[in-house]
Amino acid sequence: MTKAAAIFPGQGAQLVGMGRDIAEQHACAREVFARADAMLGIPLSVMCFDGPEERLGATDVQQPAIFTTSVAIYHAAIAAGRIRSDDFVAMGGLSLGEYTALHLAGAIEFEDALRLVHERGRLMQAAAEAQPGGMVTVLGLDEAAVLGVCERLARFGRISPANFNTPGQIVISGDRAACEAAPAEIEAAGGKHVTLKVAGAFHSELMRPAADSLRKTLDAARIRPPRIRVIANVDAGYHGDAASIRESLFRQVFNPVRWQACVERLIADGCDEFREIGPNRHLSGMMRKINRAAKAVNISTLADLSA
Image (cartoon, rainbow, N blue to C red; front, side, top):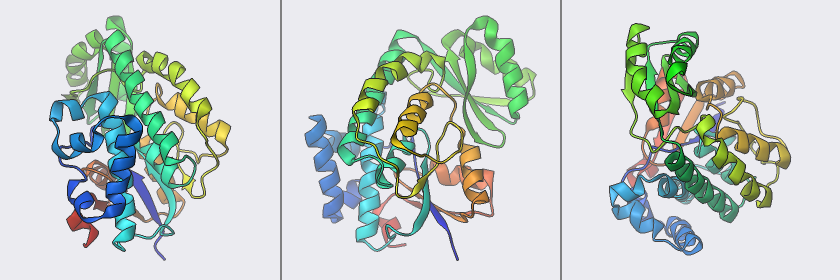
């Protein structure tokens, strides 16, 4: 019998037009966008549907935008009969997507989750502006080699692994000078690199001020144990009580995301099908590199609802 996990995308998955075709056809999706617009007091749905791309890509907008779009697509997929709420034995998400998973697993109400991701995005944007940094994807090197690269770059500033995405794909994050020096060190170690167009050094020590400020919002949020297992980015363990969820989400801001380990844990625990629900197809692409035997299905457009 198939055991399915729902997975939800994180920052970088945004694209102008996301969710528009589904919202046009499904009232439940329109309602999700309308609730977000009203609560945040900004035209979030307009930015999702029509852009501009530059504003949608800003950290303080893209985080609530991706969260809201993913939730809207999830409810539309249920309304269309594409999925059922009891299809999933577990849920997970990449960075921001972990909040989506916790909400849809019943741990955090929509309003609290939206407030959290909006504040998280605002604080991360502020931290990025206060301490300029960047991120570089390292291709073709294992964890030990990447750690060696970071050690050699330490003379330029703080830098460390931020995302363990797939075998041979690790993102490093840190001070701008260290990121600018990274390509030469990566190539010297036998790897390849892609410099990411991001606002700052996410999932690194440069984000600790954002995490410290987020604590107040985390403490005020109504959180309870999820009714479906949700896997945590920071340690690939399952979330437990409210206090441990708050602590894990606090640590997630400045600790690396261990996505490969999360997927491998879910597979080891019996999940053999993954349904990526949300804009773009990043996680499905990663799945093929982590374990090609596991089936990955993406649900992000109106056409996907009838597939």
